[in-house]
Length: 189
Image 1 (tube, helix red, strand yellow):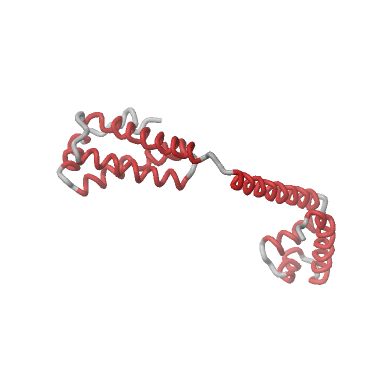
Image 2 (tube, rainbow, N blue to C red):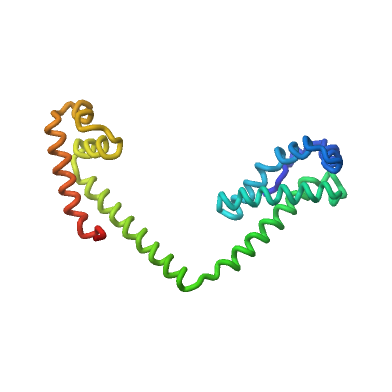
């Protein structure tokens, strides 16, 4: 992915770079506005971590502005390529550092495996609950949805479904007992 649009290369790069070298804060803001979205897109794609992408974007913008202030860009018409090079280098350094940190101790690995088991158990409970709910009538599903998910009172559910309050209460109670009994072996004591 390139930082600059092929047809939209802005003609005032040289002027903006000269203003940045002179310490013009407005030119620095213009630079940030012009490149921030493109840099964060590349950082997101490469790091796949929103928080890391935001941090990398800040780091890249600061590095680029420092280089421009120091006059390190010789050919101002190549500003986009210069920023792209800084972006690539900073992200590559981050990825190399992250790869080195990926070497885990056995304790951390055990914690991860324990978390994976918990996620698997949760997913299995969710699958069984969905299977159990799919076997219920549409009316029973609506009662549970309106009361448990949407948070409506039984009176509101009864009015919405044009049933008596007692009928809704009994159906909900029966469904919850049935589902609880079915899923009881999976619960953690």
